[in-house]
Amino acid sequence: MLPPRILGLLVLLLAVQGLCKPTKSTEEPDYEDDTPFDDEEEEDEDEEVDNTGTAEAPPQILSQAMSIRVKAGSTVKLPCQVTHTENYVVAWLKDDKYLYVESVAHTEDYKRIVRLPDNTLVISNASVADTSNNYKCSILRKPDPIDLIHRLLVDERPHQEPATPPPQHSHKGIIRVIPSRKVEVSQGHSIRLGCETDIQPPPEIKWFIENKKVDGYDPDVILDGNYITIHRVNESHSGMYQCLAEDGSKMPAMEAITVVVHYKPKIEVERSIVYSGERMESELTCIVSAYPEAIVTWHKDGKILTHKKGSIVMHHGITMKGNKTKHVLKILHTLVRDFGEYKCRAQNTVGVPSQAMVYGAEMTDDDAGIILKWRLESYSPISEYKLQYRRKGDQEWTVVEPEVKDGKENQFLVEYPIRELQPGSYETILKARNAFGWSLDSKPHTFTGDYPPDLALKEGNSATVRSSETLLALILVVLSCAFTSLQLFT
Image 1 (cartoon, rainbow, N blue to C red):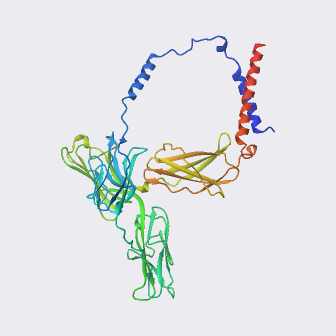
Image 2: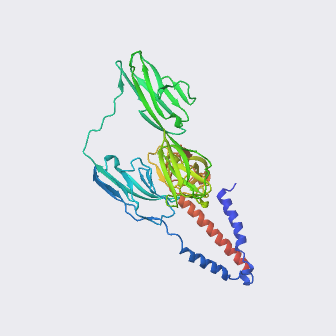
């Protein structure tokens, strides 16, 4: 049986035989069927070109990045002069936590950290806690925000940092908690908390959460001796978990773990319908529960509302119990055009992309590599992918950045061809980033770098052999066309 490559060349030759035959147009040029020149189309094209000159100017940040070093107690000014931002929101962030969205404060320290009307951020009475390499002024443009980053170092007289408190001692031994005294976990994940002691004889370990005994109150909280496992963590599992070593003494040893759950925003509204009238004051309220704190925006008819528009006033981040904040939209003098449907939208850093999952793999068209395919979910546009792969046993990863393509609603697909692989077993990991940060690494996916049997080439020969095959095909095509032409002239 002929090898697949030879069969392919034979099929190509048969197809070329038909293409090489001259058509009637080569014997007698005939222009009757040509499409006449359309003056109107030319005019339309000219109009389109002219219109490009009237396009809206893109937003820009005119200030330059700065690195500032000051002494504690100083006043610091971080400039961010912007232009053409009438249709965009400008925000200030520190370490990716919002300080201001336009002129609306999202920091409790708003009296000391102030945003001026020209968008300069002023920090009064600076302290070491204000030190950061990431003071970011950002024009929130989709899909790619425009950022300016300043660095600030605040010097203060050296002082002795308080040491981490040692494990608590009882009169008989030590008790400690694992994995640590503070655990942060994302919604939907699982965690395991433990309590260890060398007290003899071994005491009975009792667990409490916020002074309430842990004993079957939640099916997702499993008690197993000295350990607690929490499945499918949600915001209700936040709190202090206390481990008590019941040894019969009046003051048994106790340690505690603070569990902090990161979860997506949840929104409640005080009234889903607000009745009002012309020239009256209207007030809409939504209550947001989230950790970390959410950024809340108001929308009407699909457009974001800002404090600049008309008689609209916004109050953000009014603290309530727990992780709840209250957000109020006031229309001081309601007009007919103000009636309609308003939406309160909240986002926080838990909005990072989901963990990518491999859903397919196939050979490239030239059989020289493999195309891997991932699927992931993100409610904000993806800005970057990072793919790394290596042959098993190798220490170093090859890192590449696959092309970012628009998703369909909140679903994104990633395809990337990995070429020139030597035979062997490989592993690959992908992660994605949006405005809220990087996703978790995908689970390692294993694939083989072996070529099909008819392409099993020695190292370094792949490109040479393929070039030879391509050249041979071109020669055969030219000879076939020449032979066909000779037959026509004889």
